[in-house]
Image (cartoon, rainbow, N blue to C red; front, side, top):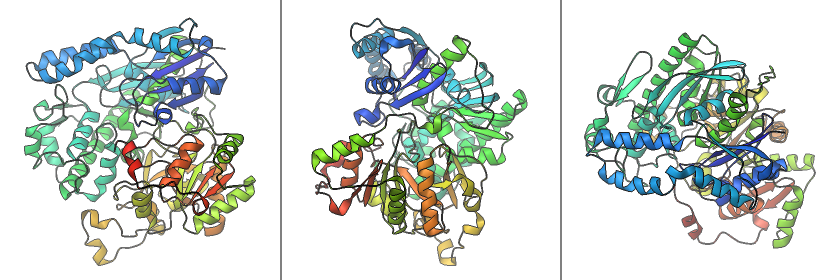
Length: 613
């Protein structure tokens, strides 16, 4: 047995992943244990959970690999400050103590933290990968393709902001890269910041806001901010940005270009923010399409794998699948830094140790549906309920599915906790809040009374894989909610002249299809296709719901409130259930009904526990 532990930490979304003899056996993000969203600390709890799942100890590990090289990142930091001097001196003074005190000595810090996990045990061999190398490995090695191009796009790793690779068998060959400060990820984050959302967590809000706007700033972006070449490579005009050396993303020249300073967080959204969101989304899609065309011509392969934060832009991914040159696209479900832990471990197994990479050939990846985290067993749920005297029901499988499907069909919102926790930013039917996609009021109810978040944000549909083309303009697999497609024309509803005349956020409550709760204002939806093979229990619930309603589609959103990590344990789920407007909670085979529970709602002061994202 050869066990490799991959670690991502100290920047954002720290995580651990365990690979045993080339197979991903466990992966988890630290935030789920600490309950601090985007927790960047050493993933001690995640490591313990991964080892516990595999029945291993630290002493059983052949090696531990960190997902990037901090000294190279430190070199980039110093060179950047020197290049921009004397600008950025205040930022330099802020950053240096952190690096000198800890990050520059990361090898020693990691050994100390690993030793604390199992005192008295010799430290395993410690290796360091490169940031984009870890991203590329996370994209290619778990993919279902024996040979593929790989595109990684993010903010910045050590120096790379975008990189292209060729994966073939167990090899991964670097082809070329784009370098800091010229970054598509940082360009998108600059607009995220200017729209009043939080960098490294609010980018998906900007993507969801984009359909409410008009692309009126696209020409301005291309004329002033970015010099885009035909091959998709580009350079940013750094006179408009502050992220290289400052404490903010943009500066006063950027403000002047786009008609004012950044929106204050939590203040009302205006049409300007919507238009900014639409414009940078259009620019992002154009860049990705040009890059994909270049890569396809250069490498001559039909499959593309993607990772890095930009790969979480499912609108761009959907357009690339529809219009781009590649026949097949696979995106790592934990495409951000957390997934670097998987990539780092797989990279050691295949590239460093030279181990073979078998590909099944049936189109399946090796991510196990991203269901790689810890689970709550039935006895744990029973013990939790008994220790608190909580009224609940226990059903066998068939009874449970019938009961939950009936409640969903009656308009109830159900918290659904089953099996292993998902790895990555999406709930995929194991730590989910579910609702009836046919309800015209469900989108607003879920946003305002359950998630406590902005009303404009869309919800994703979960649909039985074999029924996807009946409901959406899509006929393929999208198991990780990383592709956007239009609702099938036969399911759409024409708008009245009055509805069509609405503008911006006023368009929100217009029903556009038979499944209005998951149909965005541009008739699109962020799809999750659910396979009977990958998640038989969630598939069976969709099937039961279809049997009652004729509709195999449910709203599936992550089981948390705004600013909270996705729930992990029964206790996490019950607490969130009782603080929100969720009507019923299912954990494994146990059902808790809100109206029968003791009151735990309180006055809402608990919301201060979570920093708004």
